Every structure is written in C-alpha cells, then in structure tokens.
Image 1: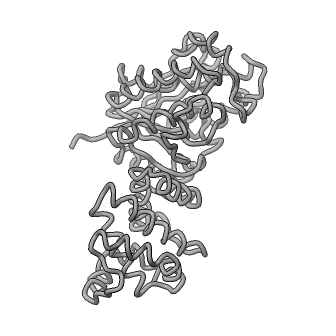
Image 2: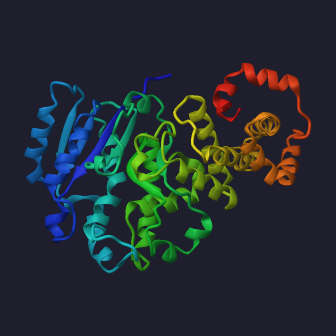
Length: 387
C-alpha cells in the first residue's frame, strides 16, 4: 500500500475591514495561526497581498522546528471562485439565527474552500496523496492539545471525510428554503480531507447545491451546503463525529463530546439513518477497545445501552456481522454485567429479546462457554467497566 501524505490548505482574508462587521481582526487571526504554523505538514496559504509579509514572519519563527514546505498564494477576495456570485448573494437574506460574522463576504470565502483545495490538489506542489482544509484560526474553537498528526495522515480514507455534529435527514432538506432558513449546526467545516478524485466529485456536488441555493431566499455558508450534499449522497463520504471543539481530536478516534455523539446515535436510529448510526456505533466500540474513551461516570450504563441497543437495530440493516456481535455482548451483559446496565436492558426487555432473535441470539439462554471465551478475549478489555 502506498504511503499516504497530506497537504494542508488554509486562507486569511480581512473581512473585518471589508465590511466593518464584527469579524475578528487579522491580528487576532495571526495569533491563532501559530498552532497551524507549527504543524509539520506541507501547508498552502491563500491570502491578500497585505497579509503576506506578516504570515511569512510567523512561518519564519518556526523554521527551526518545522521542516515541511510552506507556500503562500497571493489572492484577493475578488479573485476567489465564488466572488462572481456576489450580486446574487447580496439579494438573499441572512439565515434567521445568523451571527454578525455571517456576512456576504463570509459566504463567498467559506463556499470557496473546496475550490481552493481542488486548485492545490491539481497543482500538488508537495506531491501529496491527500489534501485537507484547516481554518486559519482553528485554535479559536478546536481543542489542539496532543493532536496525533501522523495518525491522522496514516488513517486518511480515499473518500472526502467530514466532521458531523448532528446528522441531517432527507426529510429536513426536502424543503431547501426551510432548511437554509437557519444554521442547524450539522457539519463542522473547519477541518475536512479528501483525495483529488474524491474532492473533485465533492466540488461538483457542492457547486450544484450552491447554485440551487442562489435561486432561493437565504444565503447559506459552506457548512449548510455540505449538510445537504452529504444527506443526499451519504455513502460517498467518511465521517468523524463530535462537537466543534473536537474537530481535530476526534478525527481518527472518538475522544470527547460523548453526550452529543450519543444523542446523534439515537437520532440516527430513530430517523432511519442506519448507515450513519452503524458507523457511530462502530467508532464508539473501536474507541473503547483502543482506550481512547472510558465510561467511568454515572451515564456509562445508559451510554452502553445506547451502543448495544441502537447500534444493534441500525447495524441489523447495514452490517449483520456487527449486529450479531452486539447481540452477543448484550446477552452476556444481561446475565453478568452491573445491575444498572441490566436495569436498562430489563426496561426494554421485550423489544431487546425480540430483536436479538432476528440474529438467532436468545437472550434467555446463558452460554457458559461463550462467556469464558469472552473473558479471555480483547473484548473483555473493551467492556470490562461493565462487570
């Protein structure tokens, strides 16, 4: 298998000066940029001419410890791909819960992200297999402590990988005007990745949806566009899950934001988004197995039941092998786990028993040999907090 490599892409534009709006000024963003500047991966930066010198100074501060290439592309806002639609965007309303930062030029800048990535992917100055957008001031919102960049690069999928806050249903996006009337907090676009091939398809779909948005009432930013695109083509993409703060930390494994992820798991199961619910359940089990998360607080039994119950129901439609695995863990837990988890199972006993029968797992029959093998397997380390 070929070694994976990653080029990061970012941009700095002074929207504060352009619009006299409540944007952070460039000095604040340049301080926030220090984290991105220390990442030892190739980086391409789009910026207005007036910022080039100050960005070069920041890069120079870390040249003794950062060896990856840095390339600054001077590009004015008026030269960005979606600036040509400025007049059309000006005719649209801001969405109802827009913050002061969600301005016309902000929409132009954020919706240009994928196109800028594609430009870098086509020229590929550092001969990378993958490309990722990272917001210039991402440390404003993201937890940047102890990010394992070699692991992120090593585990990059061929698909575009996006970070999901809450999943979106086809029913919600059917009425575009209603959906775009608010920012619903579904996708965090501060960091996402792809290959040239997968980004090319993503660019095509985002551009098509952007032009569809122009025919409506509300001016959307890229995260709203991406939510629609991923909902209509869910299997084209790979996903990470969590809240904005975990956009880097959770990109490979779930490490934080468990409350929101569990809410999303339940939501996906109840809304019939079985593909995504199965993916969430698998990532939770993997993160438990690898020690990235540990359920040691009071909600641990409720969370475990969500994984076993909702994960089982959704994976039954998507991955029968994984569903059977969860069914057998549920049976062991019913007979041997802590009484608090047993109570959750008993509260839903008739449904659990009937559901497990579909994969030929009889919850009433305790199998001693199965339990013995479980105690000797790596799965016991995954679920040991329950016993």
